[in-house]
Amino acid sequence: MSSSSFALPEPVRDYLLAHTGQETITAQKLRVQTAELAESMMQISPEQGQLMQMLLRLMGAQRAIEVGTFTGYSALQIALALPDDGTLVACDISEEWTAIGQPFWTTANVAHKIDLRIGPAVRTLNQLIENGDAGTFDFAFIDADKENYGTYYEQCLTLVRSGGLIAVDNVLWSGTVADPTITDVSTAAIRSLNERVRSDSRVQVSMIPIGDGLSLIRKK
Image (cartoon, rainbow, N blue to C red; front, side, top):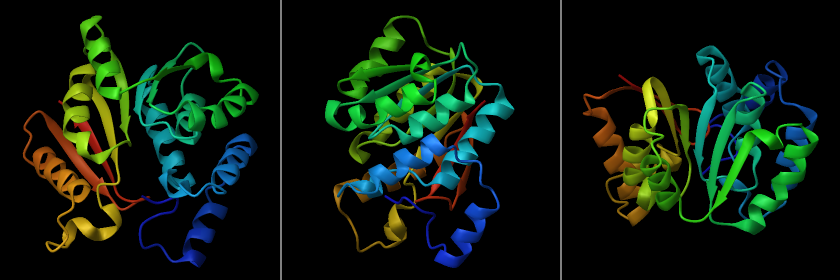
């Protein structure tokens, strides 16, 4: 988990942010407020948010899924990149955390784009599939409980269209994925997904060291 890019020295990160400065005032305020929480490291970095926005705009994305919304910073960044009639299905189990971001969504005039669904994401994604939404989404962002990453990946692969993109967060997991002596459940789950994606003939993948590691997975 990381609210800044993996192993990036602070002066270099400051320079990077100063020269990409596209974060809106509203997004900045939400990020700063979230930073006061003990769980603030669950929030994505602003440079990662900007990258995802760029990708969404290049794709002309209209429909997106987010698995793990936390306080709503990543949802805000995604929604800002969608057209006015676009939709983001945001999945989370916490009403308390998502309530922090909702006023910021309203201020940014994107609340109407965000379909927040409180409950287990596995259930929400299954409901979308059962409702006939398979192959209709342009983009999915996975950033939730690591033990279910494999399940979320398969569900999102079903829901995303051919040529669509799945972004999976925390794939470097503070570097622990490269340390064979670390075998906790979350680390093992991330390693397992990384291996699965690497050998999956249905997709193309690029793992990049932004945030805590982000895999960009294009469905063929």
